[in-house]
Length: 283
Image (tube, rainbow, N blue to C red; front, side):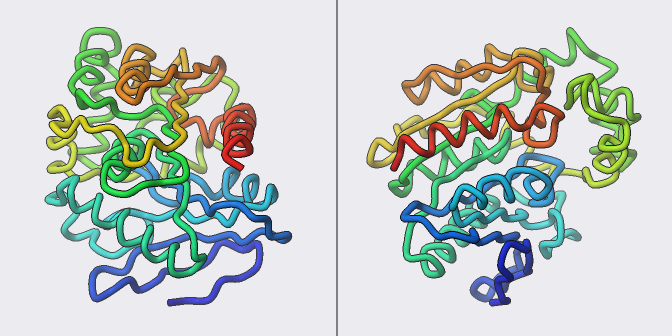
């Protein structure tokens, strides 16, 4: 199962008899009576996207923090079969890691999902009651088609860059990556660090997410829900974030000055502070 090291993200943990999944974990220096947090990354990314800012920030607040890499992502096994993984298989990864955290900590985690990870967190919340559900720039229940149409008509060059990454494995040009995913305030050095960590996504999962979610049931047990988005997000524009929030019966909180990948952007802290305030309300 691997060893936790205090305040140091670590480990690729063997879960059941299936693929090894990478789980970054940070235990707080001072434990509190609070639920653990599981961070779920979006498409083209991995657990690494939570490591620079959100894992240390929330562990410093006393929350046991975990971030998984879905199969074929980051340092998880399964890269060779990535193209054919379905969204349901990603959901199985989330379920396995939730069970692992429950065994490890004795508590069900709050799920915080970004983009595709928000889609997965929303789907999982219909299966099991959660203490809280937070979605950052989530894929809405109607699927990705609205995002694709938005990019096609408003930002065709950015759509081409995304397709070049997906179909040719070519990392986006720095200026286009910034325009698509980040704000103008993110430093060039940070942008260079991130560009080569993005990867291809499952073709099958992207096709699955183009379709609407046919299961429109509300989350089990009526957990506290938070939906966050950005007014400058080109990939998941405000009307899609508001649609996801409406489906969950809440109002989306919208930021300015951050892009789609808000947990890595220059103004990540204001997103983290909004999440922290909401998490405190759960206690």
